[in-house]
Amino acid sequence: MRYCLNRLKIPNVLRMAFGGYGYSKIKRDKVQIQARPSCSPFLMKARSILRVNATAPQIQLIYALNPVILGWTNYHRHIVATRMFRKVDYVLWHCLWRWAKRRHSNKSAGWRLKRYWHSISGRSWRFAAETGKRKPDGGKDWLPLVCANQTMIRRHLKIGSNANPYDSEWRSYFAARGTAKRIGATGPDYRLS
Image (cartoon, rainbow, N blue to C red; front, top):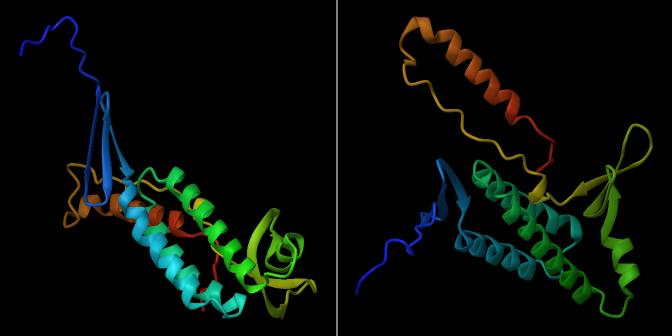
């Protein structure tokens, strides 16, 4: 077989999958993206939690799902996973809709929406349960289900090539690095317990 080098075009994109991640090299930039198979076990686990809690109260279901969603999103937040987070929220919404439909098969869709989905913090259609407590202003206190697509994507800060944690002249560098990590780590309080 002969190749005509004039007609042969080698794309400037290199893609491979390894360890649940996909790696793409587009021109000179290397981008780490999430491979599709890593999402499936997570969604299977979420569906099994929904199956086990088919007759459980809504607040118990949220307490069971929140740590799983938070753990998975925090594990994958350092890569290009925004599209996958959106897909996970989409699939979870439909699973929760089927859960509500199974519980109240004789009720209308509008009734189910008002019962299980609420407008919280300017965002409508949040799957949330009332905790039974009141806020200081007298409003209801809600426990929402964590949204995967609200997770901030944070890249790893690379350590300078000359930086040495045991050298005293680099102490200020590592102190600033630790402060930047702590500031970026603070986020909304999801009240898991």
